[in-house]
Length: 261
Image (cartoon, rainbow, N blue to C red):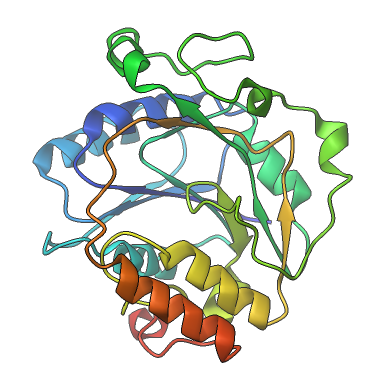
């Protein structure tokens, strides 16, 4: 299995630096790192260029012009350029547990996607987080919410089986899937612009195609850095697209990844 780690980002190099530090600490490294950049300024590119010199895996920076929230499009472009057959996806505001890659890779199974745990970092702790460049956490760490989610118990991960329903615990910052399953549903729906539903709508189509979802309970952990919520001006439109995919049992979107091959 060749693993591509996909990190989406937009104009927050301070957070992305901590993500990079956590990638360097991974007990199992991905075969490549893809940065899906939704139009960040030059300081993000400078950070990525510097990081490329400090890690021994290929780093591919995929960027497009900033003309609004186009996360679906930049993720499609990045996955189209990936060389791996398995994609592990997170966001540029999520610090990775040292065994994040290991957990997703070891639990990957055919016709299945995985989603792991997300621990929230409190708003009151963000200044200290950046000042001290903290990337290691445990159940008693300061500044985190829902501490039980920090527990990594490998034996417990095996008790969860794949299910054909959409979990409300799914988050696009902590999901993995086979590239072939992504391509089979034509990837992200680029009719979905603005914040909301783009990850879950993709998963709805995968489920409709027969791919099952498995939760990595007690594993696959990320630590999400608090930030203000993005504008939700397009949420209702995106929500309607997802409802249509559910009601019509859609397993394909017209405006997807195929244009990039």
